[in-house]
Image (tube, rainbow, N blue to C red; front, side, top):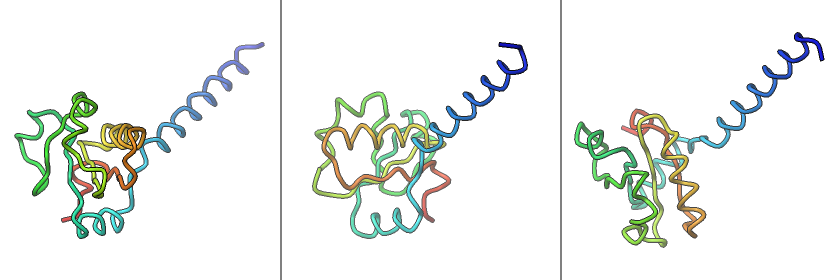
Length: 117
């Protein structure tokens, strides 16, 4: 394989990985997040305690992503759950964890700046 073909293959592979990552970190539409919050959703900030202490969303509970699995008992399965973090990556991961644990009404809102005002 000549070097130019190898470069194209590498660029294509990198683009595919970025596209997959973007799909995995997809945030819920703002209208969905608003509806869930309006219907009594638990709001969970999965950032670190230090990030949470610097300011969060009203009525949000701080459960850092690295402690989420050990604290699942604090979250009801019969209520909607809205998750957020700083950028949306951790909240997307948290949503996958909750869904794998049997939670059905879960949404990643993205980052704190994406939360409805």
